[in-house]
Image 1 (cartoon, one colour):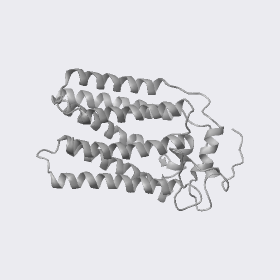
Image 2 (spheres, one colour; image 1 turned 135 degrees about the horizontal axis):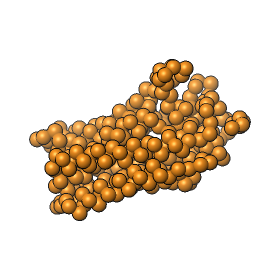
Image 3 (cartoon, one colour; image 1 turned 60 degrees about the vertical axis):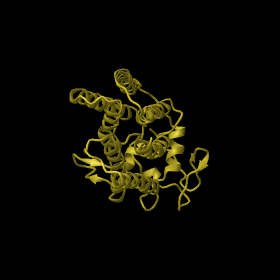
Image 4 (tube, helix red, strand yellow; image 1 turned 90 degrees about the vertical axis):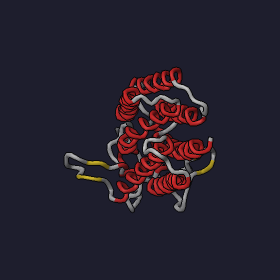
Length: 275
């Protein structure tokens, strides 16, 4: 790809539900957004911990504790991304191991998020199954394995659909901060050339089969939590689809996904305790 001149001083703000998304800086800096997401995920985790302190669980595998664990893992996810940004990557860019989240966001994938989701998504299915009174160990294990496979497919979808760019230097300021607005503009103007839907569709089919099977054979008096989980998983797949359909840039996809993670986990935390 030919180098494209990028103006990092005069970019239009990214809109979040129609509202310009900016913090202290005149530019939307990825580290600032990551800090915001980490704080919000921490608040959700703290709320869940307070609820468990007031209404303790009898067994560690109760769904209320598992929801708290999902929130904690989401906090760890954003915390790891923030730590990676602060340290300017892990490993050696010329060695066998190199993990730099900045180039990931530029190219259109997020290995840190995918790694944590390999635990979070199976936990959501375990919660879903247990809320439907499906508690047989072999069934739970089978659901967990299928959920991991579905999340691997989602991560594979990101890896197979990347922007044709090999460096993040065009989108960082003098302090080596990744600027999301010029990156968003670049991704908007240089859309994905070849898109492979197979991994995402495969993951979606696996999740649909799991949700449907457990819904048919399970039973519950309070369907609120299972419905929230269905909505959550569906939204994640729809957002990934919008990205692959070139309706969103990867920057937009990452922002909306982080916001949805936090909001839905907060709603699920409240619902699992009171509804």
